[in-house]
Length: 278
Image: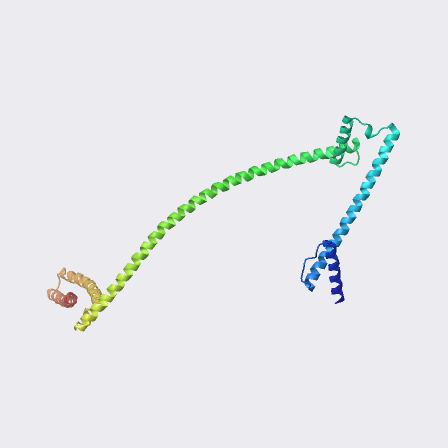
């Protein structure tokens, strides 16, 4: 509890320091908000300390540079009785250019021993940059080719998509037409089925034999076809007997048997046909 109160006090002091004379915005005071604000205050304190150290370091370096510059100026005055204030406009311009070059090249002084390595490093950086630019140009050329191929492929795909959509639309029309025809045929089939059923019920009510119904007639037709198929080998057998010349009585007997069997089948066949015609 004491730690919580201490954090709240630190947060309040930090907010007062941040906003100064301005009013502090209202916020809900609870353990969560206090924890977040305390964490921010700690980060701010660490950042302020780092910034203060950097500023102090820069002040110290500036002081050292000023002392060094004053020392060199005094040394120059003592050696050759020379002062930058005594320079002409052109000389001042050259001196400023020399100083700006030293600053740009980040040399420790303006001597040739400092300028030459710095210029060499700058030249090396320039060559590396040019080489990198050439690599980037080559890569850019490859990317442009790939982009062109991609655009061509995209165009082809769009055309294929349009063709596919057109074909799909045509097929959809065909499918819809077939579905309509199928629905029509289904309706007609149901209509015929109910009509047949009603007709059969009507005929049955009038005393029609059940054997004359549609299904019975279909079955009779199948039986008739089967009987016709059965007569084919018998006729061939009868023809083979007719071609024989041996025992006439035996042949006549076989012929009579075959005729009787054929007559029986034909009679049954005639009966079936008569029933179908009814």
